[in-house]
Length: 288
Image 1 (spheres, helix red, strand yellow):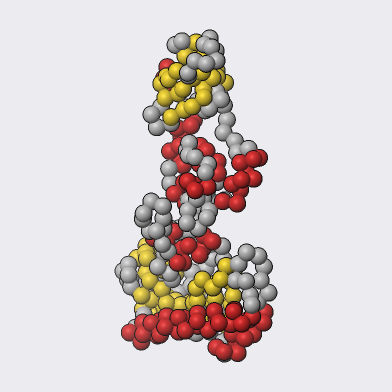
Image 2: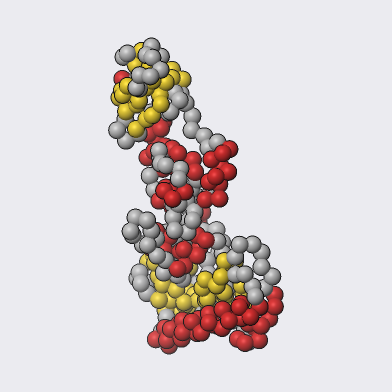
């Protein structure tokens, strides 16, 4: 067992464990800790707690100190420097004619390096740009290419629901989402309906997936063969929430509309299956 505190370095980011060295800290306290990037200033997101050794993937790094007023002033100065560094980098990108979009700039707390985050359609040869920036800032320069999801998380904005992006508001890490989830939830497979502002599948598809997965275990899928009070038929539509099925009965003419039954009224003979076909994958695969 080990006593830990959880520290977050970005407003909505992953929480990392550190050894508090006996200090009692509260959520919201600012602290200085040692990381792989050197000294960093972060916010306590998780107060002192005890965790099992199996919850720790590597030896805990210790708390250096509780942030002082001088530390907080230095952090504010770094934020001002980041704005200036962004302007300079954008000018250099234009001068080098590189097809890349600068998204964010980040100074490490000890100013040992500056990290420039960017997006691009493909690989970018930025070696000359790094040398140019190093000559201006006289410190270590890192350029990191990120995806469109990370860009949305950094910049923030409003989703199609009218609320702030989940990734920018409260999600520490991205959860995997897939086209199959949209199919299992009975959503339209139109890219406009199931993609977020970032152009990828909406993260909120994950929220109710567990409930839909459970419902699908007890509900015949589209394409299933069932016995109903009026005879055997083919399930052409199901409503997982209402627990109803539309069944095309075998003993009715082709032009007769399907009849609606509750799940309890139907006995499964052979279940259907949900699968993303090749055409759908070609059309929507780039959303995942």
